[in-house]
Every structure is written in structure tokens, then in C-alpha cells.
Image (cartoon, rainbow, N blue to C red):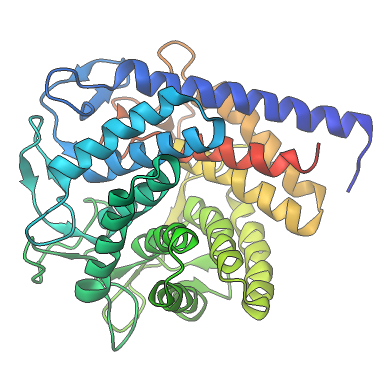
Length: 403
């Protein structure tokens, strides 16, 4: 790995730009998203920064705000960030946690009243993730207790004890439901890669704070689910949907999820500390990064997916954020400079095309005709500060060892 002056200058500039970007992202959310009338955070802001005061509020968005500002406080010790995390924690605790039946509601209305009370495992996982990070920031043991309680809910109700893995969704009473989907884009199947990836992420965060044997067991099982079922080892990409018995129900390739999983799987293996598992996951991580690099365009941006054998040439914001981290991770594992250059070129694309220099934050993405995608959320059920702020913090921390 080169250590000359130009190389160091390149890494220093990259780090400094990400430090500024992190501040910009967090400032946007502080300045624009606080709901002073109904408490918490507004449910939706459009691409022109117009607030919809009556939009539903999503559990995933609020859990990601909680994680983001807790992580930002842990990273910077800026007390303002902890204040925003406190606000998110209080709102989730009062309005989203189902204190009677466990789990969290999918959405509440603009006043904080339960709206869609479905128990989506994906949303519960993100709430565990946010609560764990908030406990680390605040020392609030009730937050850790909440994370542990939600973990136990998932193991009790959603874990498939015969075939392993987790089922997607349930009614408020934890009964079967007909519509299991996270969104209308998704396949209506019993198990998904996406939910398993974020259960893995959440349990890893919880295990690092509460190293309970059951959490460790579940993490080991989840890694096996990925290596045995979810990863297509012929292509080093992820299979997205399955039935109860892990029969494949999708041929779509998601470049963003592939590169995101390449480093999240390794994060879990590192937390478990098993040498053999770590060796195998490191090898898999690099293979997945190589596979995901097939989704890179000449401008440094990463395409969205291959669906029905057609390349979807959209470049979504979250995909770019995960690409930066995943390629930095691959570079650190291999010392191959091409991976570093992938990350640097991707950042240039983000800076020039994804970052909204007029209204702040990031656009949803670039369309197939190479224009900014119209009529998309700046803040919403899915548009959040988690992917981009996490990418900034993760890369800054990783590059600190190189400078």
C-alpha cells in the first residue's frame, strides 16, 4: 500500500470533505425536521423542502434518526446531537413501542396515534439498532432494556425454529398476515435478504453492549443463513426473497445491498471473534465487493439493480453511501488500490450529482436519463440520515489509521 505524500494528501482531503459533509447532513435534519407542533419529527419533506405536516410518521425513519444522532454524539461528543437523540428516544418510546403486545408499530399518524400497527421485523430490528446506540451515548438503561425486550420479541414470535431465519411480518397480535411486504416494490414472500441483513446489524450492535449467549447464538445462525442460503456463491451476490423453506423467489441483483452486506457481514464476524468464521467472511466480503463493482458506471456512481435481466440505470442515494464504505472495506482487506479509487470516484459522483447544494441533504437519486429523479422525498418513510451519515463516520474512523 503506497504511503507517499500524494497518497496521504488524497486521504486527508477525503477525510476532511467527509467531516464537512457529516456536519451538513446533521445540520439539515436539525434545522428542517423537528416537529414543534405535534412533537418528534415531521413525517415528510419533499425535494423542494416543503413540509407535509399531516404525513404519517414511520418507525423506520424515527429509529434511524435515533441511531444517527446517537452515533454522531458518540463520534463527536457534540451535546446538540445527544439532544436530538433524546428527542427521538422519547418519541419512539411514547408513540411507537407497543407496550401491551411487544414490538413496534409500523406507522403512527401526524399526531402520534397508531396508524398501521403491523409488526414488521425490519422496523423492530432498526429500533433495536437505534436503542443500542442510544444506550451507548446516554447510559440510559431503559433504552438497553427496550432493545433487549425487542430482541426477545423477535426470537419468540418471528424466529423460524425449524428452518431458521426470520419471518417478515405479523399483525399487531403477532398473527399471520397476507401482506408481508416492506413496500409495494417488494415481493410478498415469507423471508427476505433485506430483513435478515438488518436483524444481523441490530443484533451485532446489541451484542457489543450486552454479550448474552442467546444473542451470540442468533448471530452465528444469521451468518450461516447468509452463507448457506442468501449468498449466491456463483455470482457473490445476494438472493433477495425466499419462501418459508428458503426456496429462491427472486432473480433481482441489488448492487447496493451486495456492497452493504460485504462490510456488515464482516462487522458481525469481527464481533463474534471466531477465527475460522472471520477468515471465511473476509474472503466472502472481498468477493462480494468485486461482484458489486460490476454495478459501477464510468462516472463513479453505482447503478441500482438488475431486474428481469435488465440493468436499472438509476443511481439511488443510499446505494452510493454504501458503495463508499464497502469499497474502503475491500481496500483495507486487500490493499488493492482499485477499491480505494472506486470509493474516491463514488464520492466525487455524490458530491457533484447527489448532494443538493441548494436545499441541503442528498437528492433521492439520478434517473436513467441522467437527470435528478423528480418528485422524491428529501425526508420520508424511507429517506433518512442513516446511510449517508454512517458512511461519513465509518470512513473517517477507518481512514484515521491510514493517516
